[in-house]
Length: 339
Image (cartoon, rainbow, N blue to C red; front, top):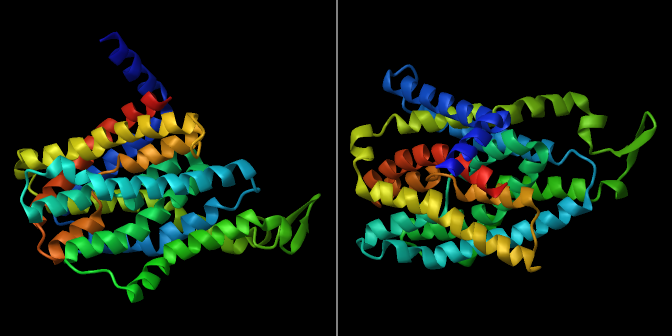
């Protein structure tokens, strides 16, 4: 009881954490209200999500890498990328053990929902709000493996198709992945690029925050839309679900506890212990970002797959609502726990 009081006290004293949780909760609730009262149309969630995915997230990737080169962050980013591939491969290969009692269709849907959380519209905004540009850098790197597997393995499993060689190029040509690699290149090799003298310092011509402010400022505004629009879209999507049916679904609660609590805790101990032993070591900040990504609720892309290919869309929607509520409630505790 005393430990719980101390944790709660730490949470309440952390203004950044309280601000993230309260802001996400407020905007999600606002989205639910707007959806239930039909203030916004049902397709508004899709429109807002598209703005986040096609405009705000790319702008976020570009602006996050507009900082002085740091070799430590580069090494951490490489290690985090390796861990991201390891995490997703382990999830895709072993997560079925939690759902072996379910039927084939439901088992497949729950497996993919567990392997791929809502890192884009839920994880990245939280990493941005808590840890600034460095948090976005780590989150963007983590998402490379996520996107590769989501649009290949996840899609193939939900659509019941086999991955072909000609489809692989399209997966790696995902615009966000391309922008992430380009931004990383400009950041990592900025000292080797043409320089511009500003004041007493020289900067790469691609440091647009210093050399082309008229481009940087609009991009920063677009990047700033990520969190509020993503959380509003989440609320609008949740407004389409029946709260009573979702909150009384045993499958949804079981999935949510496995996805949002059990798996992040397991991976925390695995990564932390192996990292301390010298296996692709991660700093506390990089590890926290990875845990935030793992603690995200059901991904909207997987729910869209479930609806399109008729893979248990009802249970997918219920899992989305319950896992979002648990994720918001559990997030402060896992962050404080890691500290």
